[in-house]
Image (tube, rainbow, N blue to C red; front, side):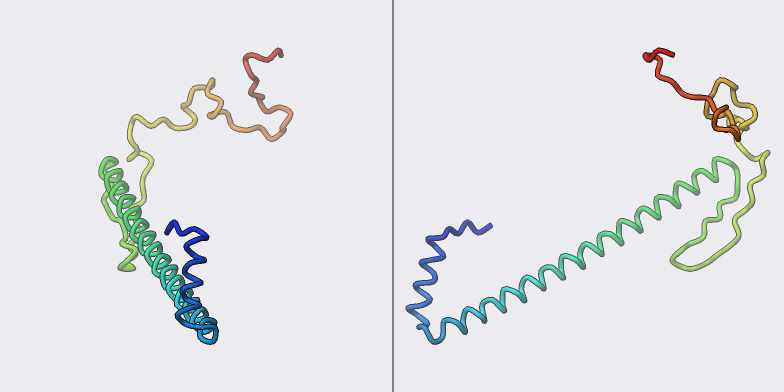
Length: 139
């Protein structure tokens, strides 16, 4: 980070010993360590607070995007737009969607093609369940 080698540290220690003397050097080293600890603790606290603020802001943005997307989908389906605001605490009952209000392009599960494996309901007996096989492997 500071690109300080061993020779520079040794030179600094010798100069500090000559300037402060052997009596005051331990006290100065403890004081410098205390300042470094305080500076590091305040830096870590500042960084943690900044990360929390950024996470809160990201969560708010995500929530707003989800609300906007929900409003757009409700308008496409022709339902009234009634999205409760979480920050204000207002809770209004959302309108119940009727099956006839669904888009005509959506197919009911019973109308799905029988060849679609996702549309086949799972059987109660696991031995009767269809098994997906690799087309490359022999039967």
